[in-house]
Image 1 (cartoon, one colour):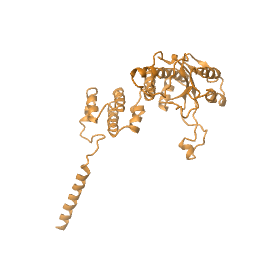
Image 2 (cartoon, rainbow, N blue to C red):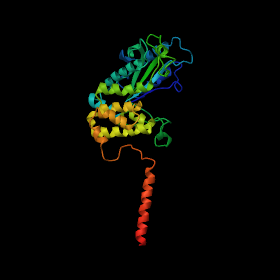
Image 3 (cartoon, helix red, strand yellow):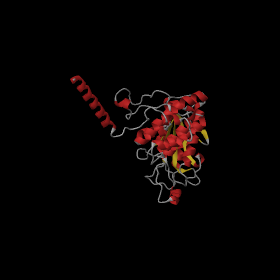
Image 4 (cartoon, one colour):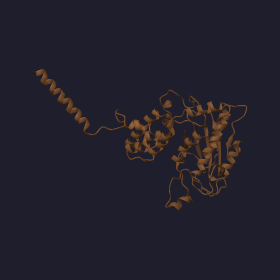
Length: 326
């Protein structure tokens, strides 16, 4: 699951939402259907574009000219996740399932602010739209190397959700910025000003999806796995390698393994042995990995090992030379 909040530095979100609303109506203009794809939120799925623009643009009390007025959230299920939805609900019902999921994600968005009175999507002013296509841009490698042209369709199932959410809450009183990650000067200050953990919000997209649709997510399909592979320490990557072995040997315990990956990403285990000790009390099958006579997964050779091997080879060569001499 890929969830991204457009950065205020690159988004034109300090004025009217008119241009963005118009852009997100492009599929209704380019691919006319019997019925246009309407906007949805927690209150229904038949909102029209003029309503979206009018309400978002009016919800800006006490915001300055250079303040962000709204944010764009991109919710993009993976090919596996979309395939699971189509297998479960069929092509005709997948849209309804995605809309339920979109509301659930916005519930998590609201909760992530930890603000009094902001409990779920009903406390926010937001509208979302389902899109079926994605297009190549100048930023894509395929366009850069000439294999694709800007504006061409991307292949595969590209169904996703685009959300416009107001900077102000539904009552136009509280400022809510997902770009505010500061913890403030103290706990009370943080409660008053609010804070937003973007990583936690993105990760909640996986949790909500899996619980809502019964999706059996593999370790390699988690955000924690990607983050550790990209940004983790050598020790954390070694711990992840052992988890992959464990997943292959005991697929029934995938929930424990995925939870452990989250703990690895949070830096809970100082060493591989600590992680194995924690798992040993939960999953007996990890005893096999711990007592495996084969090479230890992820183990780094000691600095002296190469020297020892070189000395051995040198000694062998001398012995052979002596034998040839006699």
